[in-house]
Every structure is written in C-alpha cells, then in structure tokens.
Length: 134
Image (cartoon, rainbow, N blue to C red; front, side):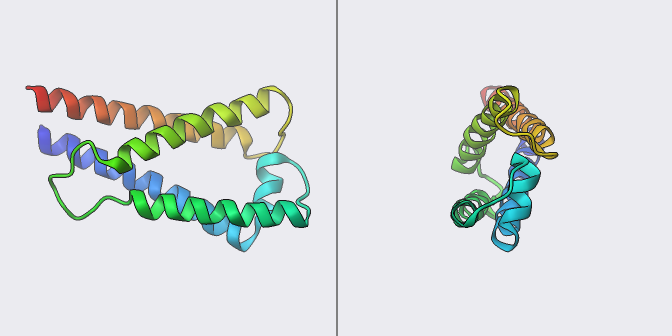
C-alpha cells in the first residue's frame, strides 16, 4: 500500500508539472491568446511582456516539481509547492471570476482544474501520511 500511494503521488505531481510547464510554453508562444482565453481581454504590449514573465515562472515550477527517479521520495517539496500553487491559483481565479474582473472562456475550467488537482494532492499527501503511520 505504501508503494501505491507513492506512485499515485508521483503521478499527480507529474501531471501538475506537465500542466504548468505546458501553460508556460503556451504563454511564451502566444501570450495574447492565453490572456484572451483566461481573462477575456486583449493583451497590450505590457500584458504580453508580463505574460512571458509568468511563463518563465510556470516553466520553472513545472521543472522544479517534476518527480525525481527515486522511488523513496516522500513528502516532497514538489508536492508542497504544487499544492500551495494550485490552492491559491484556484481561489484567485474563482475570486476574479466571481467579482466579474475576468470573463475568459477558460477561466472557470482553469479554476476547476486547479481546485481538483489541489484536492487530489491533499488526498495523496493524506494517504501517504496514513500509510507512513501504519
């Protein structure tokens, strides 16, 4: 059971890493399109510049949180980082959508995806702690 929860945790972190790195690449290639889909607004020169700065952070987060090849990785910094990031970005997107500040077609799906990933990471963390205590 211990090995199974570790594999699940590693898969969740890998999935979240791929999603964030992919979003970073999308922001690098077409910041205007990503901003339009999330915010429902046209990107100006400064917005595109900031979108590309965000892309660097998302790429770094994705790479930094990618699970190592070690099978004994427990309570990893990647899990903590992805959990905090997904919780906060889900709450922020939900706030922006509820306040009517963002109206992009992908805002609510992105908020939901981040919330689900955060819940799955909490579940994996909790399962890992339970199997460690048994």
